[in-house]
Image (cartoon, rainbow, N blue to C red; front, side, top):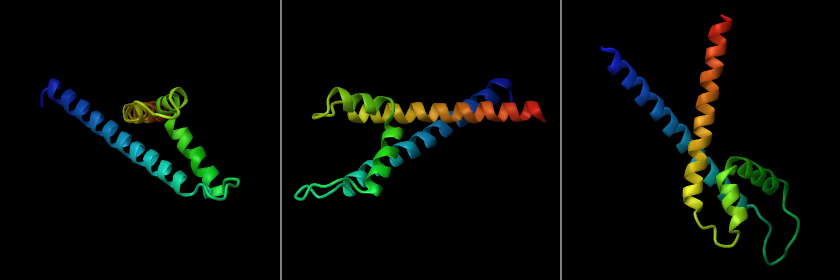
Length: 112
């Protein structure tokens, strides 16, 4: 294979990995949001949130940082732009994870 073809294959493979990680993040973030809703206390009899609800909400908040978190703070009642923010957050986290794995593997090669 020629050099441009090899580079093209690497780029396609990297984009596929980024898309897969973003899809996993997006699905996990939405699942935790639903689980947080399902584990919240009964609205008829208000009470403190359970340990499960607090744990799930904390995990969802971490996964929602930074874009969904900002949308929730900017428009708490409407959640305008939630879907766009959720996708952007997933892509950002995917880039961070892929970048960290790339740096980690380069450091491991340099040490070997």
